[in-house]
Image 1 (tube, rainbow, N blue to C red):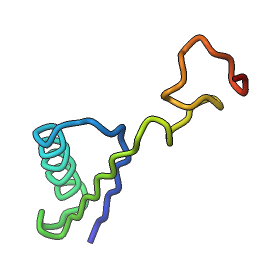
Image 2 (image 1 turned 90 degrees about the vertical axis):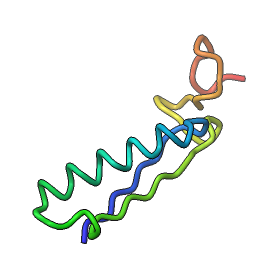
Image 3 (image 1 turned 45 degrees about the horizontal axis):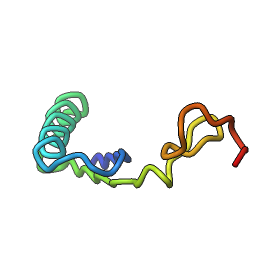
Length: 69
């Protein structure tokens, strides 16, 4: 029973989430050789202020160096 967890930025609409879940389910079932009903997909919307890359929060201005205020 595959379980897939997707973390993505908050703000994607229901249609995009449904498309993502359908595609992940279809591909995982094919590759794993299991029925689609056995695939669970969890989608977590993460606010940009809780997501960081390279030491910079995603809601920070792009020109601000990491660790400065």
